[in-house]
Length: 262
Image 1: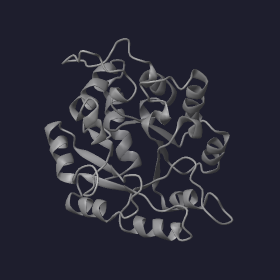
Image 2: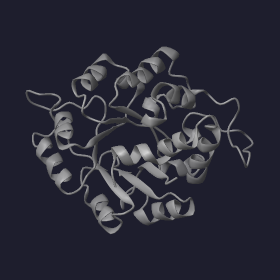
Image 3: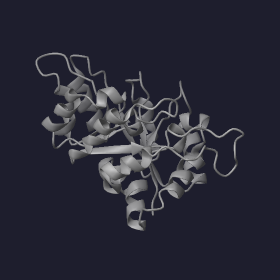
């Protein structure tokens, strides 16, 4: 089963360079990774260089300034240079006559959108309307749609609305390490560092979207401040005992490669 990390960050000015990611991948037998541009960075040169050097292992999801008048042209250029996706918050809107212009551009270009934001934005009627209007656009929701915080429950109603986006067949969900929604045990235990019982957040997402629309991503390197890369992969695998081998292959690699081809 090839393992694909659908959500990791590399940079020279923030976080870590690509060599640190590659070391983690090699140590943990992760075959390929999707580079997700860091928030606030619209210069995608470094990610492009990383992909050029490791074309068989990496792909790039870029950010463009969606509020700029030339945003669509900028995205077209990035796609022509090899980007497989663009990162947009759920409330991103374009200036001018068509507020969905940047989303439509991604659909026309055949690239996916990786979307991160608050649960309230994903649960909104405006986002559901956007998704319904663009049925051929693959939209991947990051971080369990903002329902992933270990401190403070977002509320069952809000979670139901976020997970209700599974009604749209073009929507996918990313899940990351257990440390995003489970509380750390104190004192820390070596084999399983979280308090039990675990919140049902991960199982609720799988029940809604199914393994064919779920994808694992480490959230490297922020995950290093939680349970660490190895545990972010190992522990969800161990917890998802109900998955068949084929379903596990989808959730931990196959779906990511379908949406973000390398």
